[in-house]
Length: 339
Image 1 (cartoon, helix red, strand yellow):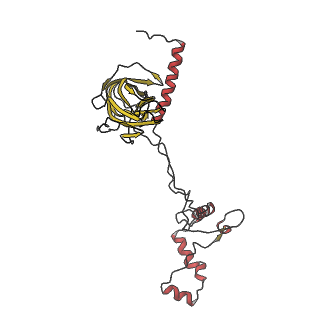
Image 2 (cartoon, helix red, strand yellow; image 1 turned 135 degrees about the vertical axis):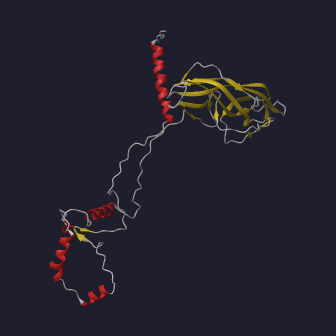
Image 3 (cartoon, helix red, strand yellow; image 1 turned 90 degrees about the horizontal axis):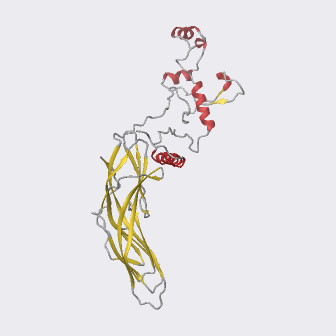
């Protein structure tokens, strides 16, 4: 079976779709672990203090370093060296014999010339209160942390999308996917949005405007790389959705705007069949139909729908009222299941 050749225009569209798919898939990138060491600078410690603390640590006496006396050499120096010629005052002997502590000279300033440090002579000092920074006797290597991806797909969705063709969610297929085709199901909460305005009708009677509206989802669309793809239409269930809504506006002779939001329930989708190649990203869209069945004493009125309806009152109005009560169906978060 030969693959049909593509025209130049079709090849260009395919390339653009692949590029757009790559951009969309980057929304789901999981960044690696980032090494963020704690800074020692707290407003009271300077770089000079930190450098001095590190120098003092490097120049400290190291009993395990080469060039030090052996035990025999230390004993020979003790019994025959200059230590035997040292004299002590009676006060010093009495202080030591009574358990007195010797003075800690480790924090006293010492000139660099005493440590054989070349260059201009400065005083070195050891301050244990300064943290030891950028000094390690056991260096650690920080490599890229391996991340094990166990998800077969990821979903990204925004709440309260007001549109007649909203992107309900974006689906990203991951590498652990175990089948080439999946049939997906999900449900989303929906709200009706009404807006419009009335102009002053001097000759009109003082009555309110009235309307009734019917809501339905005509179809579900799927886009790859921003381009629509052909799919078999899934099953759409209206069991938990109020499909007809009635309301009224402010008085027809009173000029002004009006608007309102009413939660009308959930729409359930099943049998959405998609190819599941790894790194493929799909945008899932609803194609709504909102039709005014009646409209009286209203100068102008429009309607649209909120998808993924969360965090807004179920019945919120301004210069109007809904005579239909809001749905009592719970608002489940978007959960995509597949078989």
